[in-house]
Amino acid sequence: MNCHFKADTLEKVWLKALRAVVSSGQLVQDEDPFLEIQNLQIVYNNAFEVQTSHYINIFGEKFLDYIHRVYSPHGDQATGRNYYKIIHEQAGVDQVTQVIKKLKAEPLSRSATIILATAETPKQPCVTEINFSIRNGLLHATVVFKSSDLAKKFIPDMVEISHIHKQISQALGIARGSVTAHLLSAQVYKTDQKIALNALGSVTISNYFKTHAVIENWDKEAAEWDKNIQKPEYYVNIENGYSRFLDFLKKEISNSDQNSNSVALDSGCGTGIIAGILKDKGYSVFGVDISPQMLRFAHKDLASTQYVLANSLDLPYGNDYFDIICSRGVLISHVGKKYVDTFLNEHGRVLKKGGLFMFDFITHFNTSENRKKRNKAYMDFRRMARHIENHGFEVIARSGTDANRVNAVLCRKING
Image 1: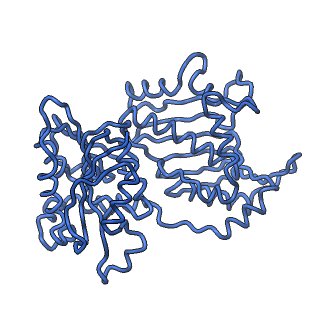
Image 2 (image 1 turned 30 degrees about the vertical axis):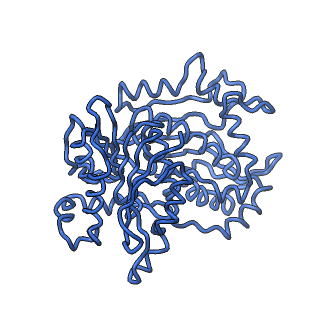
Image 3 (image 1 turned 45 degrees about the vertical axis):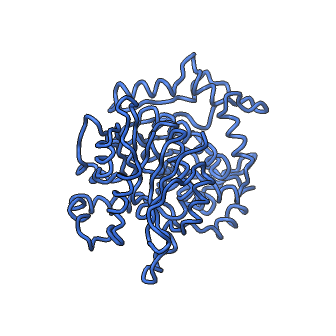
């Protein structure tokens, strides 16, 4: 039996696969009987989304903690399992470092693989290999399992592997793409079947970042974007929101000291209009956008601007990388309220202490827009200011008033 499941997030696709195994898996009468589907493939698009709320509600945190120890430098003392040592110290070689070196030297290499299971491995891991490849400007990961307890151990394994995926992504400056897991045997033990079925009956999944829908929407906008934003009636110009943001940026972001080598990020850059302003202010500029077509039409200046295909919620840069970050429209048009914390955390992570972060957001909806309230990331200024402070920033300037549908803020990162 070959089964293929696909979704935007790890937890969403896991729930699909788990439901299939517990409801229609073949019963194997072992010492500890289990249900099994062989040759199962799981694919998800948002590598950064490894939240495990439903998993924890169903099975608790015991196996999350156990697998975390297994992938940690000292391993799990009780079982003697140490995947960290296999990955980072196999025959004196750090395989993560080797993967990074290979993909830097040969970005279109067919494979750069971390091997976990060899004939010499005393305790055979369930994960046998992790393969990384760069395709269409993204770093994709493929994980092979000889077997996996889909109920308890699969999610913790994928959470730990996501850390390796992110480490390699940041080292290469290439955003993460899809993750594929091949399970030669996916199992659910009979002792877990009832609790899983009961929990699955009450699970609802909604409001995830819908990667392909977002990309499709902005790809359609790309060719006419520069022309459309000049029109007063265009939707991004409600209350002159677009031009107000540009004026706010020009006023509040100082020119770079030519000797400082300051680096700025235009997050959700579209065709690079803000990137161009930052470049004119003397910064070395990076622009990231999820839409390949937006980047195709971006204003190219290879000497001072580097455009990267990436999700603003999963930036392919190391910690404390940028001096300035500007993000116009991401919280307004790209992501829902579920992602405000992710948005602030990720931009705070890549911003240097003392660095400046400017972004805009929706403060309220007009009565005609009630339908959108369910998903949009909106909150009044006072609430947003508290949120910003809770994430290690201080607000130093504001554009707009409580009467404006869209406000922008300039924040300084105060926590290292």
